[in-house]
Image (cartoon, rainbow, N blue to C red; front, side, top):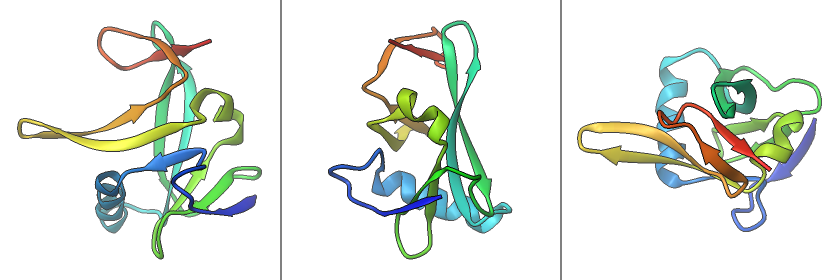
Length: 118
C-alpha cells in the first residue's frame, strides 16, 4: 500500500467536511476503522460506487489519512474511473445522502445508481 498525506488540492479523491463527519459517525456504529472506495460494474450505464467500512485496505490500495482518526483506502483498479472525485454529504429535505461529484462521468442512469465514463 502506498501512504500519502491528505492534500485537498491534489488529492485523487477529496472528502468534504460534511462527508468526513458522516464517515466518522458511521465508523462509530459499524465494524471497521477506515473507509474504502471502489467501483463495480453494475446497472444500465456501467459502474456504481462502493463504500465499505473496513479494518484495513487491500494490497495496492492507495491510502490517505483524512484526519487523525479517519483513513481512506482507494482501490487502485478503480482509479481511472474515480480520479478527481469529490465525496460530499448532501441534505435534501429531511434526507441525507452521499453524493459523488466525479468529473469523469459522461452519463448517469435515471435512478442515479450507475454511471459511465469515457
